Image (cartoon, rainbow, N blue to C red; front, side, top):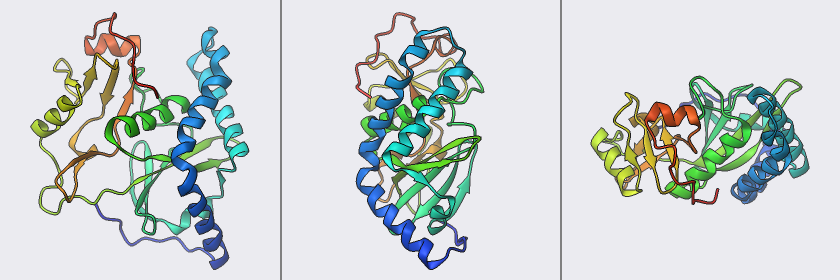
Length: 255
């Protein structure tokens, strides 16, 4: 996976400001991830225990995330991203490359926070999205963190920084058998009752979705590296869809 050569124009003073922000963010972004999760949990606990709709909870979490970003000094100007090289555009993120920090910069789509393990076609809430990256760090040894937030009156977009993975030159894409073995070593078993690649750990009560080869790279050292998986605690719909036991143990991993 290599960045392309497209670059946005940016004034020299803007570049300096962006680089200063990048330097400071690189020091705090990983620690900011659990801090943001904790803030959203505390800010919305009463709402989640009420009978509010999922859309209500989503909107309240967006407001809480905006508040946290402002208090943490992590609100970005869009021009600050012009220092990075555009790489790809997918259903969940715009992806850019930070050549100085050797990082992938992933920007959520406006009005959404990636896929969810809760139900078909649903966006994750902000807290679910950030928990997903926290699980990425804990399960796969990643070092993803929050680079900042892009805020407008209508939406909040999360900008995540993740280590850049240089793919193996000859065999960048692992086989299905290699992926199955990789997750089995982490005590995740493949769910054979669905057509999409899905894995589940009963010990952790966590499900991994979107585990197709394009989201798992073989790096230059021939290690398999997940780069963008959907991880979370399965909701009732997901349990039924995957045929999971309703009495599965609750997650013993601390997000």
